[in-house]
Amino acid sequence: MSPRILVTGARGMVGSALVRRLSAGGYSQVLAPSRDELDLLDQRAVYAYLAEHRPDYVFIAAARVGGIQANNLYRADFIARTSSSRPT
Image 1: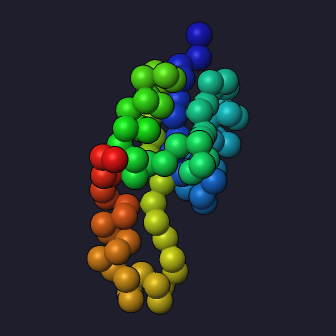
Image 2: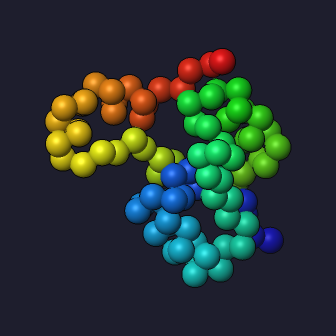
């Protein structure tokens, strides 16, 4: 039986490549929720998603990105949004 694998950020460059590689490798239970399906900044939603889907493995490829200029202008914002999850 193929393990359930959750890939966050599956619409981005890294996450989509990971999903393609897992699928090509024969993994048939790859969970790749969109931001609308799973808001990673909503801690309760994350816990509920994990409890419902019970993945065996989790790859976190989700991040807030903005290009070189945005990264230089808003460093703290990108770090805070990427690394935190606030309970609601």
